[in-house]
Length: 84
Image (tube, rainbow, N blue to C red; front, side):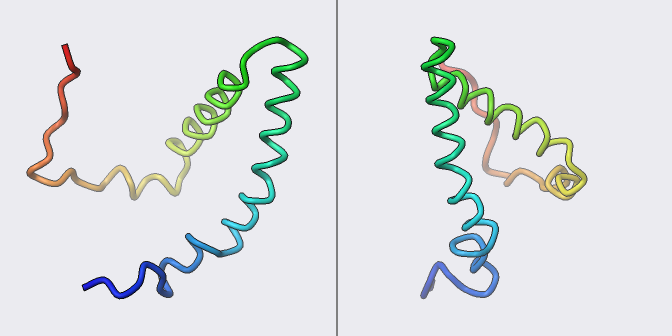
């Protein structure tokens, strides 16, 4: 039975230094996106998508991602086929 979602292993996920740093950086990044939208006339969502794709690209190639590539899919979960 789950008593709490927060324990020593998840403490940093919810309120650790990395999370606090992300909270501080996020508003600045969002304001920059809004400035780009206003200045260049390109929707803010485009800039956010670009930022996320850039971060994901680098995360997938990081040395720390090597362990993630070794995780096996659960047997009962097959790849979903696209809807027709």
